[in-house]
Every structure is written in C-alpha cells, then in structure tokens.
Length: 158
Image (cartoon, rainbow, N blue to C red):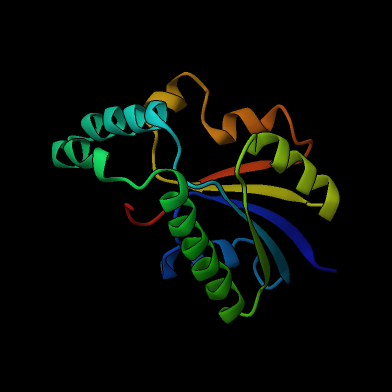
C-alpha cells in the first residue's frame, strides 16, 4: 500500500527537505502530489518584509521589492516545482506537481479528494505574522481538507 501525501511548497526543495519528507514514514512507500503557488501580490510582499524584520533580516526586507511577481513569478515557480518533483523522484518516490494560480486552499481540497490523500504536508519558511493570526496555509488547511495537516519548516531561506 502506498501512502499518499499532498505537499504544498513555496520554493524549490533543498536536498535536506527532500530527505526530511521522504523519511517521515520510514520504509513505507509514499506518493507525493506537489503544489506550488507562485509568489503573490503587494500584500504578500508586505507580509514577507514584516517576517524578515521579525527575524532580524533587515537586508532581506529591503530586497523584497526584487521578488518576481506575475508572469516572472510563474516562470520561477514552474522551475522550483520541476526541480522539487525531480528531486523527489530521484529519491525513489513517486511524484507529480502542479502550479496553483488562484484559491490555493480550494485547489488543495480538490487534489486531496482527487488523489485520496492520507495527509497534507506544508513545507514553508516561518511566516510569523500569518502564523500569529492563523492565516498561514497549514492553519487554514486544517479546517478545510479533512485529512491531517503537518507543518514543516524548510531547511533554507529562499
């Protein structure tokens, strides 16, 4: 029997991230359905800058205006998704991926139902403002998808 995980990411997975998620269930085979939403709008940029300041990373906060938006973000997102899916496959896992353009939680709920997922894993950098107000993906998904939601922090900053 194959365990099915829907994996929400916001950037390309590192080798440490791949090892982490692929070993969560021991020797049990896992199929991953990876979702990535490209970077968002000005409000997302503001929240990222506030998070950077909260982490003491003032240089990062100043550079938030350099983050790709719109079509550029989709291109970067597609590359990050392709790299992540390839890395999961190289580790011996079954994996596919999709970009999520709008309504990520609706897309998450739909794919959980479509693939009969056993769990959702949200792999993200810390987002303190969103987490404090329970507006992060993991908190919101817990009330929507009907399967366990595991929140993990990625092993490096984007």
